[in-house]
Image 1 (cartoon, helix red, strand yellow):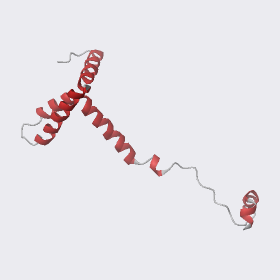
Image 2 (cartoon, rainbow, N blue to C red):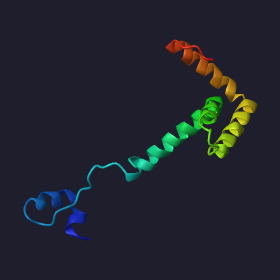
Image 3 (cartoon, helix red, strand yellow):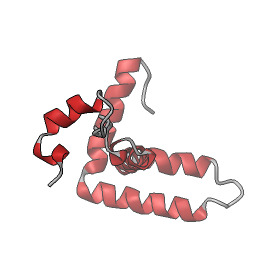
Image 4 (tube, rainbow, N blue to C red):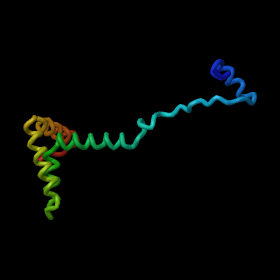
Length: 110
């Protein structure tokens, strides 16, 4: 057992006297707490939830931009999500929320 292990407080005092210094860990957050991948997961989760709650808007948006036919696969996927959302009842909740938001900003939801 070394002298620093027996008396940690004394080792810190002796460090100023020129003896071996005791390293203290810096108070940093864990790397996983500030990782950009965590933010990417949150953003994609919110986007997925939005698409699932408002699938009709996504289908309309894709249909408007599908003049060349390049968006056939995403459009088919969005139509499938729209059907599942309607079957689960989530679509009605999304429509109600969309109507509330349209009324809040003063637009008619057509």
